[in-house]
Length: 133
Image 1 (cartoon, rainbow, N blue to C red):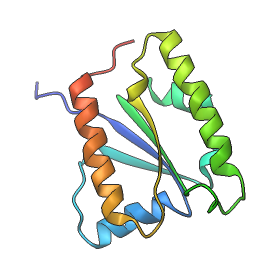
Image 2 (cartoon, helix red, strand yellow):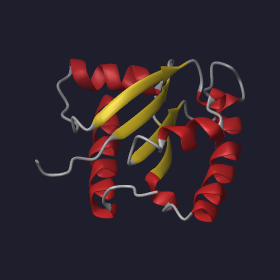
Image 3 (cartoon, rainbow, N blue to C red):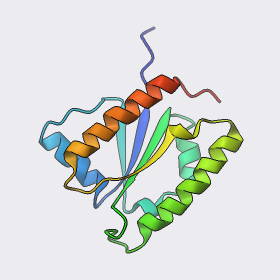
Image 4 (spheres, rainbow, N blue to C red):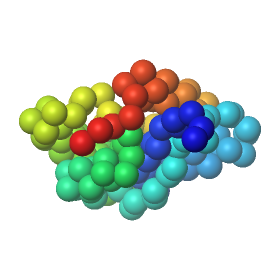
């Protein structure tokens, strides 16, 4: 058996974070192959249940959305921020390190920042090790 590699899921807003990931790829900014991206219409669409279910098969989840004030759906990212606080409390109650779930605002023009955040998050998840339920 090989060495453990983290499984990181990024739930990315279609309008910003997903576009940043695309830009990072186009400009060849490297980020870990441990990152898998799921595109959603808006970060405000991400329910806490989605995150908990995703953690059944992943070691870390990053929710990416538009910067506050720039949401294409006006207030979706504010909704995501409120839900993120709830998710953090749920994780603690479940005995899961809250650092395994992260919320980031990354605009479509921030390809380099996307790659940097992914490398940083990958390093954090490697430090935490595999998620054990």
